Amino acid sequence: MEERLIETFRWLHRHPELALAEHKTTAYIRSILVESGIRLLDTGLETGLIAEIGADEGPVVALRADIDALPVCEQTGLDYASENPGVMHACGHDFHATAMLGAALLLKAREGEIPGRVKVIFQPAEEVNRGAGMMVATGLLDDVKLFLAGHTYPWYGAGTLGVRPGPVMASADRFFARITGVGCHAGHPELGVDPIPALAAIVTAAQTVVSRRVNPFDSAVVSVTRVAAGNTWNVTPQTAELEGTVRAMTAKTRDDIQRRLEAIVSDTARAFGCEAAFEYERQPDPVINDAEICLRAAEVARELGMTVRECQPSMGSEDFSAYLKIAPGAFFRVGTGGGWDNHHPRFTADPAALMPAARFFAAMAERELKRLAGT
Ligand code: NI
Image (cartoon, rainbow, N blue to C red; front, side, top):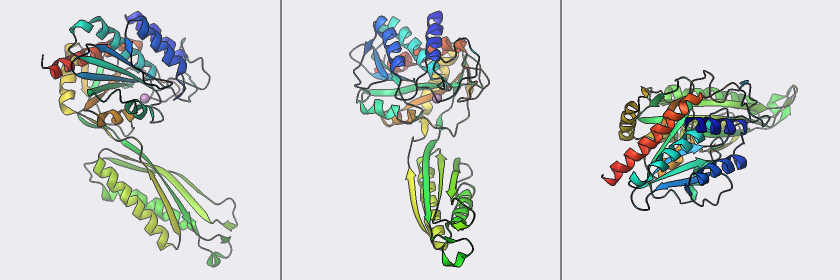
Protein backbone atom coordinates (compact mmCIF):
# COMPACT_ATOMS: atom_id res chain seq x y z
CA MET A 1 0.00 0.00 0.00
CA GLU A 2 2.81 2.41 0.81
CA GLU A 3 4.20 2.08 -2.73
CA ARG A 4 0.78 2.74 -4.17
CA LEU A 5 0.35 5.85 -2.04
CA ILE A 6 3.78 7.17 -2.99
CA GLU A 7 2.94 6.67 -6.66
CA THR A 8 -0.36 8.53 -6.16
CA PHE A 9 1.38 11.33 -4.26
CA ARG A 10 3.96 11.77 -7.02
CA TRP A 11 1.27 11.85 -9.70
CA LEU A 12 -0.68 14.52 -7.82
CA HIS A 13 2.50 16.51 -7.20
CA ARG A 14 3.35 16.45 -10.90
CA HIS A 15 -0.16 17.61 -11.87
CA PRO A 16 -1.07 20.54 -9.59
CA GLU A 17 -4.23 22.51 -10.40
CA LEU A 18 -5.44 25.83 -9.02
CA ALA A 19 -8.57 26.31 -6.92
CA LEU A 20 -11.80 25.39 -8.76
CA ALA A 21 -9.79 24.01 -11.71
CA GLU A 22 -8.98 20.64 -10.05
CA HIS A 23 -10.46 18.60 -12.92
CA LYS A 24 -7.64 16.12 -13.57
CA THR A 25 -7.02 15.80 -9.84
CA THR A 26 -10.68 14.98 -9.24
CA ALA A 27 -10.76 12.45 -12.11
CA TYR A 28 -7.59 10.78 -10.85
CA ILE A 29 -8.83 10.43 -7.25
CA ARG A 30 -12.22 9.27 -8.51
CA SER A 31 -10.62 6.52 -10.61
CA ILE A 32 -8.73 5.15 -7.59
CA LEU A 33 -11.85 5.24 -5.39
CA VAL A 34 -14.02 3.56 -8.02
CA GLU A 35 -11.42 0.91 -8.76
CA SER A 36 -11.30 0.16 -5.02
CA GLY A 37 -15.07 -0.29 -4.87
CA ILE A 38 -15.63 2.82 -2.75
CA ARG A 39 -19.01 4.60 -3.16
CA LEU A 40 -19.11 8.21 -4.28
CA LEU A 41 -21.83 10.68 -3.32
CA ASP A 42 -23.29 13.02 -5.91
CA THR A 43 -22.06 16.48 -4.90
CA GLY A 44 -23.20 18.17 -8.12
CA LEU A 45 -19.90 20.08 -8.07
CA GLU A 46 -17.42 20.24 -10.95
CA THR A 47 -14.40 19.47 -8.80
CA GLY A 48 -13.90 17.70 -5.50
CA LEU A 49 -15.46 14.48 -4.24
CA ILE A 50 -17.14 12.93 -1.24
CA ALA A 51 -16.55 9.18 -0.81
CA GLU A 52 -18.43 7.00 1.64
CA ILE A 53 -17.39 3.80 3.40
CA GLY A 54 -19.29 1.61 5.88
CA ALA A 55 -22.80 0.52 6.84
CA ASP A 56 -26.06 2.23 5.91
CA GLU A 57 -26.96 2.58 9.58
CA GLY A 58 -25.17 4.16 12.50
CA PRO A 59 -23.27 7.37 13.15
CA VAL A 60 -21.27 9.28 10.53
CA VAL A 61 -17.82 10.84 10.87
CA ALA A 62 -15.89 12.73 8.19
CA LEU A 63 -12.26 12.92 7.16
CA ARG A 64 -11.33 15.96 5.12
CA ALA A 65 -8.54 16.55 2.62
CA ASP A 66 -8.13 19.54 0.31
CA ILE A 67 -6.83 19.11 -3.24
CA ASP A 68 -5.94 22.50 -4.76
CA ALA A 69 -2.50 23.95 -5.53
CA LEU A 70 -1.00 27.46 -5.58
CA PRO A 71 0.28 29.90 -8.23
CA VAL A 72 3.93 29.30 -7.26
CA CYS A 73 6.87 28.39 -9.54
CA GLU A 74 8.33 25.19 -8.11
CA GLN A 75 12.04 25.17 -7.24
CA THR A 76 12.38 21.85 -5.43
CA GLY A 77 14.39 20.03 -8.10
CA LEU A 78 12.32 16.87 -7.36
CA ASP A 79 12.17 14.29 -10.16
CA TYR A 80 8.38 14.47 -9.76
CA ALA A 81 8.21 18.29 -9.78
CA SER A 82 5.22 20.15 -11.23
CA GLU A 83 4.61 19.74 -14.96
CA ASN A 84 2.12 22.62 -14.88
CA PRO A 85 4.24 25.81 -15.20
CA GLY A 86 3.62 28.40 -12.51
CA VAL A 87 1.43 26.06 -10.46
CA MET A 88 2.72 24.03 -7.52
CA HIS A 89 1.50 21.91 -4.63
CA ALA A 90 3.39 24.26 -2.31
CA CYS A 91 1.05 23.70 0.63
CA GLY A 92 1.07 19.91 0.53
CA HIS A 93 -2.57 19.41 -0.45
CA ASP A 94 -1.29 16.58 -2.67
CA PHE A 95 -0.10 14.97 0.56
CA HIS A 96 -3.48 15.55 2.25
CA ALA A 97 -5.39 13.98 -0.66
CA THR A 98 -3.06 10.97 -0.76
CA ALA A 99 -3.08 10.39 3.00
CA MET A 100 -6.90 10.52 3.14
CA LEU A 101 -7.08 8.23 0.12
CA GLY A 102 -4.87 5.86 2.12
CA ALA A 103 -7.21 6.16 5.11
CA ALA A 104 -10.18 5.44 2.81
CA LEU A 105 -8.50 2.28 1.48
CA LEU A 106 -7.65 1.09 5.01
CA LEU A 107 -11.24 1.70 6.14
CA LYS A 108 -12.59 -0.04 3.04
CA ALA A 109 -10.61 -3.15 3.99
CA ARG A 110 -12.38 -3.14 7.39
CA GLU A 111 -15.78 -2.06 6.09
CA GLY A 112 -17.63 -4.96 7.76
CA GLU A 113 -16.32 -4.00 11.20
CA ILE A 114 -17.19 -0.30 11.14
CA PRO A 115 -20.35 0.57 13.13
CA GLY A 116 -21.45 3.44 10.90
CA ARG A 117 -20.12 5.43 7.98
CA VAL A 118 -17.05 7.47 7.17
CA LYS A 119 -17.40 10.25 4.62
CA VAL A 120 -14.07 11.17 3.08
CA ILE A 121 -14.09 14.71 1.69
CA PHE A 122 -11.70 15.71 -1.11
CA GLN A 123 -12.37 19.43 -1.03
CA PRO A 124 -11.56 21.90 -3.81
CA ALA A 125 -10.54 25.55 -3.40
CA GLU A 126 -9.18 25.69 0.14
CA GLU A 127 -6.59 28.30 -0.83
CA VAL A 128 -9.33 30.76 -1.81
CA ASN A 129 -11.48 29.98 1.24
CA ARG A 130 -14.39 28.69 -0.79
CA GLY A 131 -14.28 24.91 -1.00
CA ALA A 132 -15.41 24.03 2.52
CA GLY A 133 -18.49 26.22 2.18
CA MET A 134 -19.29 24.57 -1.17
CA MET A 135 -19.00 21.09 0.34
CA VAL A 136 -21.18 22.08 3.31
CA ALA A 137 -23.78 23.58 0.93
CA THR A 138 -24.27 20.20 -0.79
CA GLY A 139 -26.15 19.09 2.35
CA LEU A 140 -24.32 15.74 2.14
CA LEU A 141 -22.51 16.43 5.40
CA ASP A 142 -25.54 17.36 7.52
CA ASP A 143 -25.49 13.96 9.28
CA VAL A 144 -21.79 14.13 10.20
CA LYS A 145 -21.15 14.02 13.96
CA LEU A 146 -17.41 14.75 13.91
CA PHE A 147 -14.86 16.17 11.44
CA LEU A 148 -11.13 15.41 11.30
CA ALA A 149 -8.42 16.93 9.12
CA GLY A 150 -4.68 17.37 9.09
CA HIS A 151 -2.18 19.74 7.54
CA THR A 152 1.40 19.22 6.43
CA TYR A 153 3.87 20.71 8.91
CA PRO A 154 7.49 21.15 7.76
CA TRP A 155 8.89 21.64 11.28
CA TYR A 156 8.09 18.10 12.48
CA GLY A 157 9.46 14.96 10.87
CA ALA A 158 7.45 12.06 9.42
CA GLY A 159 5.55 10.14 12.10
CA THR A 160 4.99 13.16 14.35
CA LEU A 161 1.52 14.54 15.03
CA GLY A 162 0.92 18.04 16.40
CA VAL A 163 -2.19 18.24 18.58
CA ARG A 164 -3.64 21.23 20.38
CA PRO A 165 -7.04 21.69 22.02
CA GLY A 166 -8.87 25.00 21.57
CA PRO A 167 -8.10 27.66 18.94
CA VAL A 168 -5.50 26.49 16.40
CA MET A 169 -6.08 28.66 13.33
CA ALA A 170 -7.19 32.29 13.25
CA SER A 171 -10.07 33.99 11.56
CA ALA A 172 -8.84 35.93 8.52
CA ASP A 173 -10.76 39.05 7.51
CA ARG A 174 -10.09 41.81 5.01
CA PHE A 175 -10.71 45.49 5.63
CA PHE A 176 -10.64 48.42 3.26
CA ALA A 177 -11.02 52.16 3.78
CA ARG A 178 -11.32 55.04 1.35
CA ILE A 179 -10.74 58.53 2.73
CA THR A 180 -12.15 61.33 0.65
CA GLY A 181 -11.00 64.93 0.99
CA VAL A 182 -10.91 67.77 -1.53
CA GLY A 183 -8.13 67.74 -4.12
CA CYS A 184 -6.17 70.91 -4.74
CA HIS A 185 -2.88 72.46 -5.87
CA ALA A 186 -0.17 71.10 -3.56
CA GLY A 187 1.11 74.66 -3.11
CA HIS A 188 -2.30 75.84 -1.85
CA PRO A 189 -3.27 73.30 0.83
CA GLU A 190 -5.72 75.76 2.40
CA LEU A 191 -7.93 75.44 -0.69
CA GLY A 192 -8.44 71.68 -0.29
CA VAL A 193 -8.75 68.93 2.32
CA ASP A 194 -5.76 66.55 2.16
CA PRO A 195 -6.77 62.90 2.79
CA ILE A 196 -3.14 61.76 3.26
CA PRO A 197 -2.57 62.99 6.86
CA ALA A 198 -5.92 61.40 7.77
CA LEU A 199 -4.79 58.11 6.22
CA ALA A 200 -1.45 58.28 8.04
CA ALA A 201 -3.20 58.93 11.37
CA ILE A 202 -5.52 55.96 10.74
CA VAL A 203 -2.56 53.65 10.03
CA THR A 204 -0.89 54.77 13.28
CA ALA A 205 -4.08 54.49 15.35
CA ALA A 206 -4.77 51.01 13.93
CA GLN A 207 -1.53 49.82 15.58
CA THR A 208 -3.05 50.53 18.99
CA VAL A 209 -5.98 48.13 18.54
CA VAL A 210 -3.94 45.04 19.40
CA SER A 211 -1.53 46.73 21.84
CA ARG A 212 -4.13 48.72 23.80
CA ARG A 213 -7.45 47.03 23.26
CA VAL A 214 -6.95 43.26 23.04
CA ASN A 215 -6.38 41.31 26.26
CA PRO A 216 -2.64 40.56 26.41
CA PHE A 217 -3.46 36.88 27.07
CA ASP A 218 -5.45 36.73 23.86
CA SER A 219 -3.86 36.88 20.38
CA ALA A 220 -4.72 39.00 17.37
CA VAL A 221 -3.14 40.73 14.38
CA VAL A 222 -4.08 43.95 12.61
CA SER A 223 -1.91 44.50 9.52
CA VAL A 224 -2.30 47.38 7.09
CA THR A 225 -0.85 45.83 3.94
CA ARG A 226 -1.57 48.39 1.23
CA VAL A 227 -1.84 52.18 1.16
CA ALA A 228 -2.40 54.22 -1.97
CA ALA A 229 -2.88 57.92 -2.67
CA GLY A 230 -2.01 60.41 -5.34
CA ASN A 231 -0.09 60.06 -8.59
CA THR A 232 2.32 62.98 -8.71
CA TRP A 233 4.26 65.46 -6.53
CA ASN A 234 2.43 68.74 -6.98
CA VAL A 235 -1.23 67.72 -6.73
CA THR A 236 -3.00 66.98 -3.45
CA PRO A 237 -5.18 63.97 -4.24
CA GLN A 238 -8.89 63.73 -3.70
CA THR A 239 -8.80 60.27 -2.11
CA ALA A 240 -6.53 57.90 -0.23
CA GLU A 241 -7.06 54.16 0.36
CA LEU A 242 -5.83 51.47 2.64
CA GLU A 243 -6.35 47.74 2.89
CA GLY A 244 -5.32 45.06 5.35
CA THR A 245 -6.14 41.98 7.38
CA VAL A 246 -7.40 41.13 10.86
CA ARG A 247 -6.59 37.79 12.48
CA ALA A 248 -8.23 36.67 15.72
CA MET A 249 -8.59 33.46 17.71
CA THR A 250 -12.02 34.08 19.23
CA ALA A 251 -15.32 35.45 17.96
CA LYS A 252 -15.39 38.10 20.69
CA THR A 253 -11.96 39.51 19.88
CA ARG A 254 -12.81 39.49 16.20
CA ASP A 255 -16.06 41.45 16.76
CA ASP A 256 -14.30 43.90 19.04
CA ILE A 257 -11.49 44.60 16.54
CA GLN A 258 -13.98 45.13 13.74
CA ARG A 259 -15.87 47.73 15.80
CA ARG A 260 -12.64 49.52 16.87
CA LEU A 261 -11.30 49.73 13.33
CA GLU A 262 -14.57 51.08 12.05
CA ALA A 263 -14.57 53.78 14.75
CA ILE A 264 -10.92 54.70 14.14
CA VAL A 265 -11.49 55.09 10.42
CA SER A 266 -14.68 57.12 10.57
CA ASP A 267 -13.80 59.31 13.57
CA THR A 268 -10.22 60.02 12.46
CA ALA A 269 -11.35 60.92 8.96
CA ARG A 270 -13.92 63.31 10.43
CA ALA A 271 -11.33 64.91 12.71
CA PHE A 272 -9.31 65.75 9.58
CA GLY A 273 -12.33 67.08 7.74
CA CYS A 274 -12.57 64.07 5.43
CA GLU A 275 -15.20 61.46 4.73
CA ALA A 276 -14.59 57.74 5.09
CA ALA A 277 -15.98 54.61 3.53
CA PHE A 278 -15.16 51.40 5.39
CA GLU A 279 -15.59 47.77 4.30
CA TYR A 280 -15.02 44.76 6.53
CA GLU A 281 -15.23 41.41 4.80
CA ARG A 282 -15.39 38.30 6.98
CA GLN A 283 -13.57 35.28 5.64
CA PRO A 284 -12.94 31.99 7.54
CA ASP A 285 -13.86 31.70 11.22
CA PRO A 286 -11.19 30.54 13.66
CA VAL A 287 -10.62 26.78 13.83
CA ILE A 288 -11.35 25.67 17.39
CA ASN A 289 -10.40 22.11 18.23
CA ASP A 290 -12.58 20.03 20.52
CA ALA A 291 -10.51 19.22 23.62
CA GLU A 292 -11.90 15.69 24.15
CA ILE A 293 -11.29 14.70 20.54
CA CYS A 294 -7.71 15.97 20.86
CA LEU A 295 -7.13 13.82 23.95
CA ARG A 296 -8.39 10.71 22.18
CA ALA A 297 -6.41 11.56 19.03
CA ALA A 298 -3.17 11.79 21.01
CA GLU A 299 -3.93 8.36 22.49
CA VAL A 300 -4.61 6.82 19.08
CA ALA A 301 -1.45 8.35 17.60
CA ARG A 302 0.71 7.04 20.46
CA GLU A 303 -0.80 3.55 20.11
CA LEU A 304 0.27 3.66 16.45
CA GLY A 305 3.82 4.53 17.49
CA MET A 306 3.64 8.17 16.41
CA THR A 307 5.32 10.97 18.34
CA VAL A 308 2.73 13.39 19.69
CA ARG A 309 3.60 17.02 20.34
CA GLU A 310 1.56 19.95 21.55
CA CYS A 311 1.77 22.31 18.58
CA GLN A 312 1.54 26.09 18.51
CA PRO A 313 -1.55 27.85 17.17
CA SER A 314 -1.15 29.72 13.89
CA MET A 315 -2.35 33.13 12.71
CA GLY A 316 -2.92 31.52 9.32
CA SER A 317 -6.49 30.52 8.52
CA GLU A 318 -8.29 27.41 7.27
CA ASP A 319 -11.75 27.06 5.82
CA PHE A 320 -12.01 23.77 7.79
CA SER A 321 -13.81 26.00 10.32
CA ALA A 322 -16.88 25.88 8.02
CA TYR A 323 -17.38 22.18 8.86
CA LEU A 324 -17.19 22.88 12.59
CA LYS A 325 -20.49 24.76 12.33
CA ILE A 326 -22.10 21.35 11.66
CA ALA A 327 -20.32 19.31 14.33
CA PRO A 328 -17.20 19.43 16.51
CA GLY A 329 -13.88 18.23 15.21
CA ALA A 330 -10.14 18.65 15.26
CA PHE A 331 -7.41 19.85 12.93
CA PHE A 332 -3.95 18.35 13.39
CA ARG A 333 -0.43 19.17 12.21
CA VAL A 334 1.07 16.23 10.39
CA GLY A 335 4.87 16.19 10.41
CA THR A 336 6.14 16.10 6.82
CA GLY A 337 9.71 17.42 7.26
CA GLY A 338 11.43 19.30 4.46
CA GLY A 339 12.36 22.45 6.35
CA TRP A 340 10.83 24.97 3.94
CA ASP A 341 7.68 26.76 4.95
CA ASN A 342 4.28 26.09 3.37
CA HIS A 343 3.80 28.18 0.20
CA HIS A 344 7.58 28.44 -0.39
CA PRO A 345 8.79 27.39 -3.90
CA ARG A 346 11.04 24.80 -2.23
CA PHE A 347 8.37 23.33 0.04
CA THR A 348 8.39 19.51 0.05
CA ALA A 349 6.48 16.85 1.98
CA ASP A 350 8.26 13.62 2.94
CA PRO A 351 6.43 10.62 1.39
CA ALA A 352 7.50 8.58 4.46
CA ALA A 353 4.83 10.52 6.37
CA LEU A 354 1.99 9.17 4.18
CA MET A 355 1.42 5.79 5.85
CA PRO A 356 1.52 7.06 9.46
CA ALA A 357 -1.01 9.77 8.50
CA ALA A 358 -3.28 7.31 6.65
CA ARG A 359 -3.18 4.85 9.55
CA PHE A 360 -3.87 7.58 12.10
CA PHE A 361 -6.92 9.00 10.32
CA ALA A 362 -8.36 5.53 9.61
CA ALA A 363 -7.86 4.40 13.21
CA MET A 364 -9.24 7.64 14.60
CA ALA A 365 -12.34 7.49 12.38
CA GLU A 366 -13.04 3.91 13.45
CA ARG A 367 -12.44 4.69 17.13
CA GLU A 368 -14.80 7.65 17.05
CA LEU A 369 -17.51 5.68 15.23
CA LYS A 370 -17.34 2.97 17.88
CA ARG A 371 -17.61 5.59 20.60
CA LEU A 372 -20.56 7.31 18.92
CA ALA A 373 -22.27 3.96 18.29
CA GLY A 374 -21.69 2.96 21.92
CA THR A 375 -19.98 -0.29 20.96
NI1 NI B 1 -2.81 24.35 3.01
